[in-house]
Image (cartoon, rainbow, N blue to C red; front, top):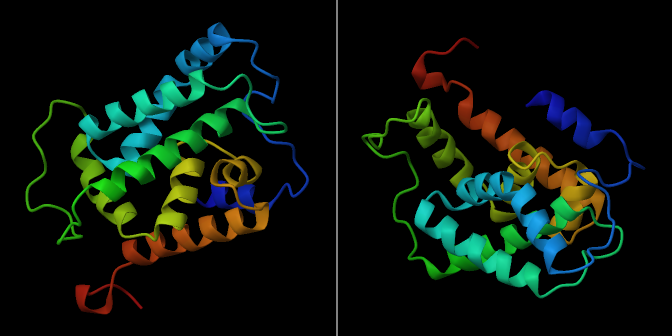
Length: 187
């Protein structure tokens, strides 16, 4: 996590990564772009939403939106553009859900055969406690693999703001992970 933070704070003048910013020439290009990045889009949506049913709706919405566009915006990497669409669709989906009354991890982890799935429960709970802007920056960087310039493009903010949001989010996650005085941790 620290290495990602270092990458986000370095490279002020780097060009956006993840596939360049070549224009899309039609629906076949959009479809191939969606297929090429489907896995990372699904992981980002799942990290933001936490439920597979909501992820499906978000990905369907992103596919409809992307199909209606002839090209990614100038100077924006296609993956950053797609993850920006995922971020916006996820925010819309979250705004339609009832407010959660409990922010902690559930008492029992969901039963699943997937290896490591139970580890995701406390991570999702910790990410859910972040401010939405910080959560977006952290998820886009750590799950989506975007650099600061791409996170900025996906969130429609400047690079400095993207770095600040990421740094605050990671700082909060590390603070949550640190043992508290009443847990008997070393000082």
